[in-house]
View 1: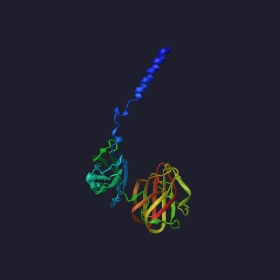
View 2 (view 1 turned 90 degrees about the horizontal axis):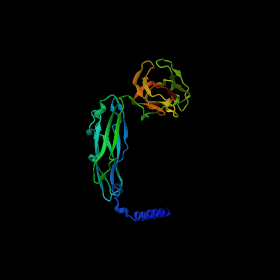
View 3 (view 1 turned 120 degrees about the vertical axis):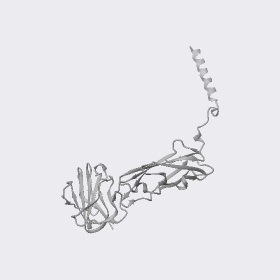
View 4 (view 1 turned 135 degrees about the horizontal axis):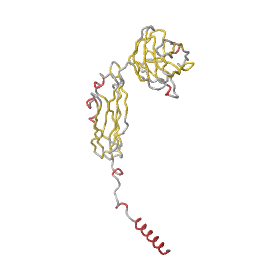
Length: 305
């Protein structure tokens, strides 16, 4: 038995010795990506917000960054050509502006090059009142080096808002009105005219916050008509689930006759919750009705020119 074990051990040692001496260069070549420079598109899958007012597309000058990269820098210039395809009713590639017809040059010694894509013609959506999504897909179709198999494309989604008079971004016009120059009332009964004055501090916050089940109404009184650019609800920064998700905004010069600008619009759960007019309005009073499974308010700001 001992002889058999010795022979087995000796055979195993000999096998290891011969195997260890084998030249790895003769077995298989390394995959191409270890030594080739591969062209790819940075896959960022960007979503772009497009705002639509009665005057047309608001942010027509938006640009979308595109990065073409190489896994390894080359000793000479590398040329890459990118093509786009689009999806969406009325949307065509003629609406998309690709610099130099999509041809990009990555200089020698560099690993990437960038350019900006834009929309040259917004007519495909400027006449559409409801919210729509449009997709631009970019893909590398030609290059002076190998093209990546898995990272040769990227997608941009244009999310056009419903045609509206207001947006939910911070105001770009006017300045915050001092709390000494306006008063705020609240209403917690949807459909009722039960407005209660609120005590407001110099920072726009209430002495006591409002938290209700499905509705909170805020009313600003500027004392006289002003050119209003925006209002803002100071909400719950620590738990967005408490904040309202829908709004209706109205204005009045006399407190009797009201003009509704936008009704039941989506209200992002950010802090504060802005509602900005694309075109400033003349008003003494502004009402912001906020709806949701819950609604929260800890203050009220207003902006005017």
